[in-house]
Length: 297
Image 1 (tube, one colour):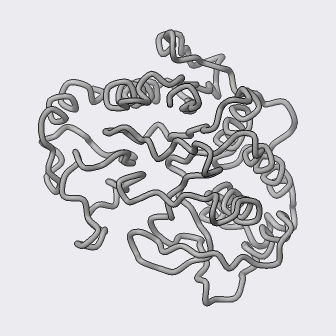
Image 2: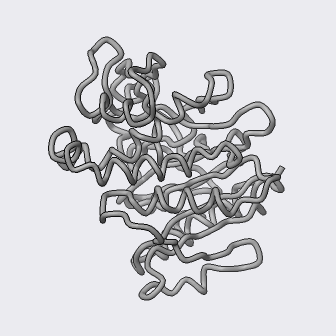
């Protein structure tokens, strides 16, 4: 299985290195049949961030390619890294698995392996943010995005995990898997580049910080919904991309009881020392592993 999958991560600053290392260690420790899959680390600041100590036989570091013009923009580097990974992937690779450095893997993430049946494996968003309910007319933000990707509307829907809203297709991007031969990431980069440089769109539909932050994710969702059939799209279960940072807001019936039950979770700026995790159980051997491995900054 691990011969057809590649994990990839991005790093932009020295202070991120311990967390990237922590994520890599979690893949190697808890990844099971995927534990020895290649890991690619894209360095967005190679002049200032030395990543040599992150590389090993199964982990490679690449400078992020900035060829072509793109304004400085929230999550620009994620879009570029995804497209570069797709360009580098060999034909036999079926699963390019993006994981944000503020995530951790605790069980074999085998549902990220697309195999022959799926082209994309993703989770619905946690909360609505800039998402638009299926019952509402399109706003200028989504209307502009849909026009850019070549559609007038999308009726595919998801229910957001935390606040339970029925939205037009809107997927979480803490971690996701795509089949590189579909070219989704490269198409994403091209559309993102055009929308970032569209001064009219930026000055109207995307003038506030929230819409600028989530533009990258929204364009990706529109591309997936117009290109990938529902049969080729796998919606992952809640044990993937679980929002530990929003744990207290998750409804009781969907709230995880134990960290050990999760496959992959996002923690953002949380303290993962077990004694600090007072609202979720942490059992051995994970408890000791976190105690000794969580970066001491």
